[in-house]
Image 1 (cartoon, helix red, strand yellow):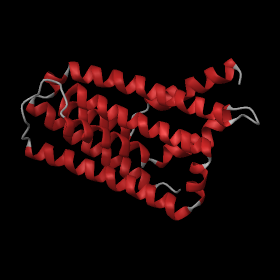
Image 2: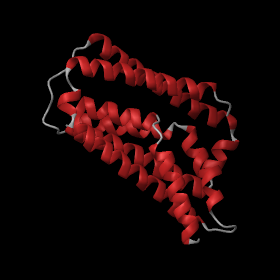
Image 3: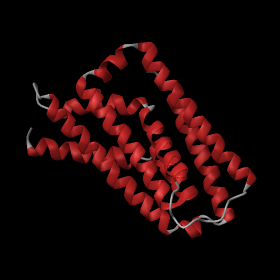
Image 4: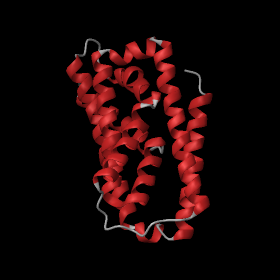
Length: 208
């Protein structure tokens, strides 16, 4: 591994992390709904799934999933269905406009679990993440690179995601009282629902 190659990978990975996707929408939704703590749990769920997929790709399990078409398609469509469910929940909240008062920023056990679960499922069912680790990441490695190096690159990508989503969560939590006004919140829920539906539709229409 050369330092130039690693820096090039970090720049490329940073660009990908900054492009809004399902993980972004899920973290935003959880932060606005449950505050900083729930947003952070959602972030940790996303990063946990990214680490798991990176390690699985390095171990060869990811390649097996991609080769076994029924398994890959099952994961793909589970992800699409999950995005649609989250979109429906956001749109329903926008229509009802019935929001509980803001809490003190702490996440109870159930809230923390819900945040982590939604973040984890959002990432683990996104086939693009696995494809990135198996098809794109190796392009930055020299021939014969070992499994340890592949895991190191994958963890670097997960770390970038952690930094970005943590910053996003902290920023949203600071502006939460403004963003949680009923009219604003309904607009944000409606926008989030539409975005999640769009991501789901794009995944459904893309060829595997």
